Image (cartoon, rainbow, N blue to C red; front, side, top):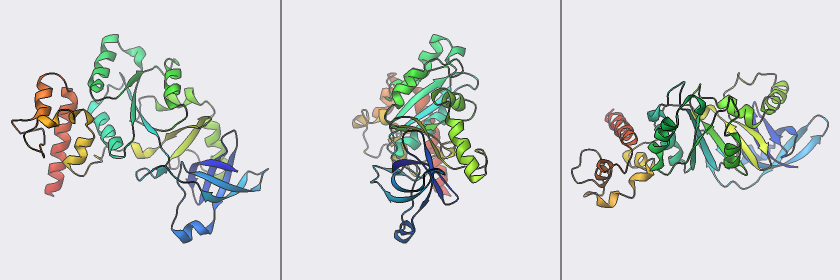
Length: 292
């Protein structure tokens, strides 16, 4: 049987067969001997031990197309970064930190703004404009009303997506709209390991439809800057690259230099001032961190 690891905890791996069944699996000792650890998101080949009880062994791991360190997951295609238009107000600084983290891990990002029913058309346009120049598509939904859900489903179809965003923006409501049976799948695992879904902080994949998984993970709720230096931070601002050829210095920080293509683009309204100010703040944090 071939399937996808949707959760790993306590030495057990829970493998979805791509249709309707979850198998509780142990990994063969050969993986430990080789220093290989199965990851959530891995495609695996399993030997079924007890079909009735849904028990199996992980026999082999299929080749990975990628793997992330934080969180430790495999075969991810994109990130869905979710914030609210209102209640709570969008924290663009936090949103930019998420995007820097995704860019560092080479994950394309799609922005979803929830609670669109609480906003005006002008407010939605203002949110979208902040990220339009950076090349991030933005979708506006109301998860509570079920509005825009099919548009999100189209963006997810055929991919493994990680769901990122702070608390209170409606991630659970979106998950319930996309997959009402997600709680049932979690419950099945919880019965096996005798722990509730909120008693652990492990990553988990939810099966939506064929070849389509959505990952809700605590690994993407951190405020940490996932950039060790200014060069890595700048990679999180892809809109800067088209203007850097006009910078006088190759190592231009785009902050204090007088002849800077990015600052010139900012003055002409070609870059978002909100994004730029967040960049300056994170650059200062990196500088302060390196001092100590």
